[in-house]
Length: 123
Image (cartoon, rainbow, N blue to C red; front, side):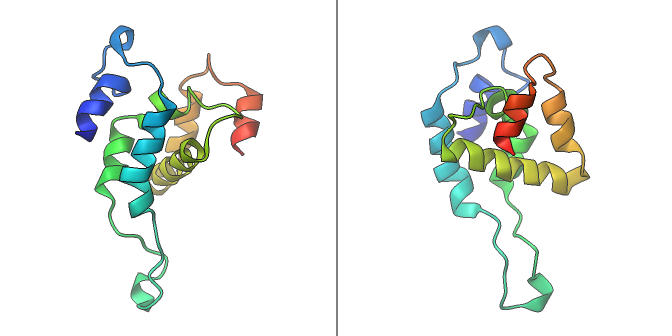
């Protein structure tokens, strides 16, 4: 189901001229159903697990399908909702944890849509 949505709205497999239009309700739904319930949590009861998070296949699927770079970041503004912002935070964290530079490449990839005010609004 999530892959079908990705293929229609943002993945590299989606034809750019036939992609679905941005929908903030879809972002909120994905956040609530796919990301919020599986947000990284610290397991304090076992010292060997401190600071680790369980594998999150949904977050990884969203990362691999370019949700952040093709849907969230291009449609981000200072008026974006909490779900949009938190989705970006979780996916930015995923990119940083995987190779340390993925987030910077992600937002630099769309240089025509990149502007200082947008960047400042996020941070």
